[in-house]
Image (tube, rainbow, N blue to C red; front, side, top):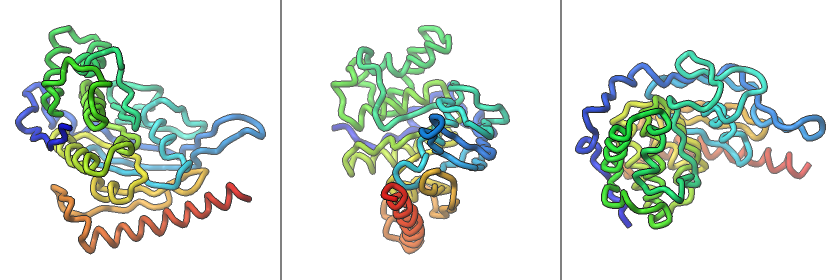
Length: 284
């Protein structure tokens, strides 16, 4: 299995200028409520949530199962429309999916009938890029994630970690200002997951984009994020916004530091309380 940490500085081409994203990727969520269904089937997924994520921030969202983490993320992506309130990216109201926002899911969501190169080139092709440009972009991102020699393979021929690297490359191929990630490493083994986290931080540092990352893993959230947001039990809302001041670049050894452990305790205590509340609601 090829799980090396890739040195992106050796692979980013002059086509990409990280400074172009320096003032992009500002996410504003204003008093958002999201419901599904009607009448007795009405489900309040997210309630009265407001949030401001600055350009270039790395934000992780934690919370008990079913609290609306993915729903909130999908409202930024444009896959879910708020029932009330508004979601804006760079002062424009989100009205649907767009190339300014790349999305990576837990399930790899690759086209099984397309090669790895074709999967990565798909976004630029849909955006109207020429075949030469699409090929160049695909080659750039294949190098970036260390999969050049697998370019002609199909997703089923790759390991889970490698498929997710393709998913990240595909999400970045349109050079978005925002990268949205819904438990992208949840299905990976512990070692591959750690390597993927380090790779992701390299990508984020090189591209300077905003990342919003949903996870159930407290250690993962603290290791990756500038801010950790904790959501309440359903209906979900932000109940804690915790700054992570661990120095960058991050090192896995930080997980044993006093600051890391103190922040982990705060997160676990809040999530445990909300999980207990959710359990009581389900059994009321």
